[in-house]
Every structure is written in structure tokens, then in C-alpha cells.
Length: 63
Image (cartoon, helix red, strand yellow):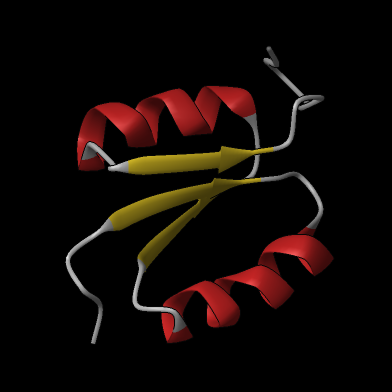
């Protein structure tokens, strides 16, 4: 039951996304997860998130 705010969480460490996703969902966000920079760009085009939270050093593509 999100508030309609789409959040994309991007991190290559599963422990981080697995812990943050439920917390962010409880805060009311609709959370999608990407595990690398290329996947993040694809998901941004697909789901058009309102907010992106990302790790700066990612495999395949980083900022």
C-alpha cells in the first residue's frame, strides 16, 4: 500500500537492498530494485521513478 511515489533503489549489494526495501515500503514508497547501473537506466526508462537512491560505485556502469 504505497503512496504512489515510485522509488528506484540501486545497489549491487543484496544485503543493502534486502534491508532497505521493506523499510522504504513501510514508509509508503513503491520500491523497485536495480543491481547495476545498466539495469538502473533500463528501469528508469520503464517505470519512470519519482526518486532514485543509488550507490555511486556500481558494476557495469557507475556515475
